[in-house]
Image 1 (tube, rainbow, N blue to C red):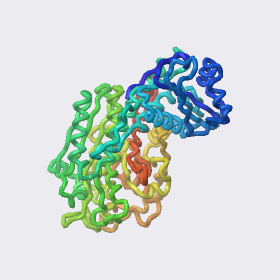
Image 2: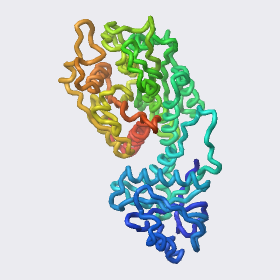
Image 3: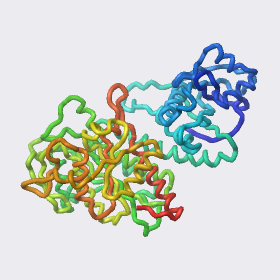
Image 4: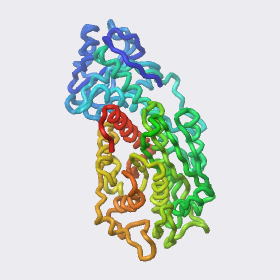
Length: 506
């Protein structure tokens, strides 16, 4: 998919299709009004006749508009003008792109970026249009033997800006949007793959493939003997029941100065989670292929970082394995020793994510990081607390948490802070080990999981993103979302901008 930025009168655009908005009730956007004037009132006549009301999601495809150079004009309903927010704008763009892809218009010129969106500027609208367009065109048929190939799919989209002075803003926004979309598409594609294909070994190969594509990226993969030597007893306890070998994947992106401390992104990479001996119910267990979406999002964010050639140092750490039941599997009540030396009583083998993450967090100490952010589909309790709209964020350093929350607001990939108070830590007590892997009782399950991880992140600034409710969707539209790649990329962008502006980061 190719994107470009342009400025000009809609009636003068030689295009297979020009896209303009219509607001309720039957009112044309500025570009629509310009087309209407050039055509001698042709569009307004159609609106008065009631062909389109302007309701959100409506479309009307027109041919042979008088005195217009475009072959077609697509009118897209935008709802009430003063009520267009992020969600409405994304639906408008998705509707337009889906319709364009059906019309045979292989290239199109869109004036939807002129629509006012509450609290958003031109840069955001252009970037978001690129991201939403790529998402709308994403296919999930990579493993189907027969694919529904479109004869003339949309291949090029020109996004119009009001003035020539806005061209530079538009170009920068397109570049960011394409990079984020590339990372999101990678995360989606990996997340949607079944567990018999996307194994820890497969994830490691994909990381190496990214390193070949982007020269500033270096990949190292630790094998089981190396993990044993490092004392990663918590991680190895999770993989004990599986025939698939675990992988500890390290990606190093060096775009900053050698003296700059890195940001470390840690992604949970459970490529399939049965729950182990504490086995899950069979209903929807197929969705546990998505338990590696934290790992996929780290790969996606570093891909976006490499695409943008950000002047920063980022390290991705991905502990990856399966959680399977067998005669060798870890049992409830077993006690294991983590890389940090802390002993853990495994009361529930389905609380395995924190076991692989705690050793990864200890491993991060060697980088003397500026900040560490772990990303994990960690707890079902997070879905109870926040549903599927926001990821949960918690951490030991408020400025870092605040950075992530702001990145979520800017990108539209939102998060919400949960507390890590000492009172919650009281639920993590064991008679037989330093710490149990679950809190006592069902209360505050997401927070007690965060408290567990905080025990292994005391030597640096750390934040935890629980994406259990946002990493994928269920039902008819089942599929990985690619979240929180936009949030993570925005977080890195913001840090680069703050450094260039002379502002201090956390």
